[in-house]
Length: 207
Image (tube, rainbow, N blue to C red):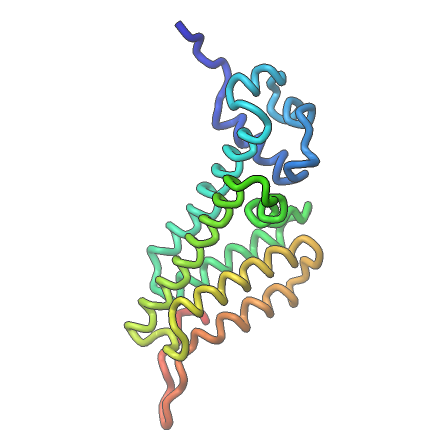
């Protein structure tokens, strides 16, 4: 009969996630992981497999607890407000991180080399999920007239994804409010419906 684990798996994954997030996959050693999690190397491997498998588990936890949770929160809002709220949270996290860690998913994208097809697929799948969230919001906003119909939802979704990725990369090197907020504000401006002659068009909330 297998012995029950004598540690909190969620807490260990959180600790490993923080370690990988701060240092990256390659620069994180088993010694770093044992120091952060409080488990010996053998216990880590017995519970999670090798370092790569632990990294994948930690990244998946980050995606669901950070990006997935943000999408779920924003999906309860109106289309324009949902996109605005998504970027507002990103800006807040980017500007209030004294360690300038950026986004763990974006960091993983730089480390997902061609030999690691599974990791590349995981990162790509999450980016597609974000892109579809943006496109879905745009589609709904165009349907109710609160988002400009000058471009297809798919095109706008791809553009917003690119702005998001660029913002998160910049946050690691130049975490300047004027730079990051300006980039996002310009991207959100394309969502505004064209003002008709003699009147004022409806605008997405807060945009």
